[in-house]
Image (cartoon, rainbow over all chains, first blue to last red; front, top):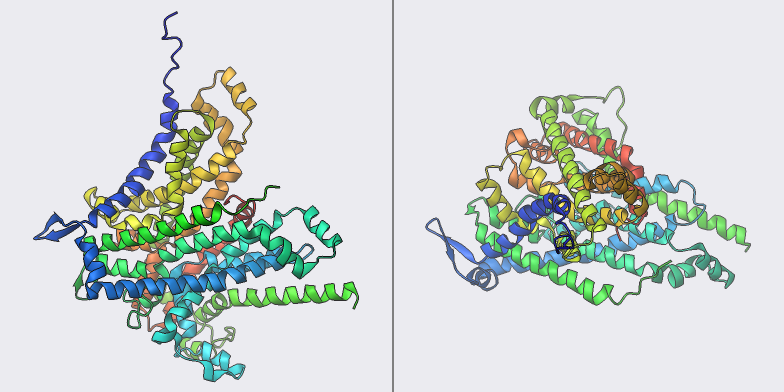
Length: 308
Length: 279
């Protein structure tokens, strides 16, 4: 027998099955991603693209015109993230814990209703809250007045000190449904035997949550944290819809996404600069990569997965 | 205190907390929608009152339908969303089948390569994507959006679908092979129908972000005839800031289709999330 018979036939169908996905993914996602990183090393001189090494990064971190804006956006972005971690995720976990209670009536209704803001677009959410918080319309001051707290009202979105926190809370309002659902799923997957065993030992409700359920859902909390991180550090839409590309008042709500958009496209008198835009995108890429690596190697690998 | 008593108290507290949060979640939507049916004076005088025969007015809707081309925007959003979902599901399922079914050199590596995109947002590459779309003449076409959303949706689709395809029984596929079915027919006729629930989950996960995206329509397809509903309402509302009737009506009109989709698919969506498709 010649060894032609032993050599397996090349299986073209594998190529056919893989090709469309790999081609589209490579051409529209991976290649542009690396091309953007590459573009950050160039600049435009007399309408020609010139290689300048790391000069754009030196400008971004060295020249105060750029670095002030960058650190401002990065700091704001961190605050945006901190509020999500401190408000959105605990509320989501608490709601999931209540919902997962067996024999709770109307659970499906609550679940669907609380998830509604998550399906709305940023444009709707941004404008709706802008109108509600607006001093012209008077819904927010009117409601505070009704409970005797009118003095607490301020035009939050227009004040530098409050605007970013207010928008972060609006974003929390919108996305609370996601941690709620994921934690709810994790809580449902805890086998009844464990909870029954705990009950026999005399551990019930609140202490059962802290001592048994919470440790078991830690991996899900880890996933939610990294999802929140990635989503927050490339956020853009809500700020743009509510405050415009200038992220006012006085850049107090500027985050990396809006900063990149402004730099790339230009605004008012400043011309758009794709190369500085790429430089900011590269910085964002690095930040997200660091976050994902900390999660993958620092947190996830240390967390024990419970298999039932 | 008896156990029954504590239990009843706990149940009441649970309902109290859930009702409170449900109100917080629904209140803004409610306020926007009821006020869109009122005349200007009533919007400002009693923002929380329901519209009645005296204050009822459709003036805002008239302005919106006259000024903005909402049917066109709606149609564009529909084409982009359905087109992207079609390609995500078809290409995603094909690739997932190849990874789950066959052993070949580089299988794991290919899986990892495709999974990269789950964590890295596609927006980072926007500058180069725009440049490419300009060069290929796709800028200001719906194809640009469909391609971008397909690329964005594929990684998670391949990941979820290949998990499900591993569970399809080998006996079934081997029976097909003995009957002389080609690998393509095995995929399309035997495997695809069995993973339909997983495909629905993937579709629902991708639908909402695609429909609601503002970034790529703004950058890749801002021209009037290819505007999506999200971008269209953003621009429209920006122009009519002072016309409260028009703004409230435009917001309500933008909420409507998403709510309709949600009512249709919410069971699928919630089942998808809670079945642990995302691990």
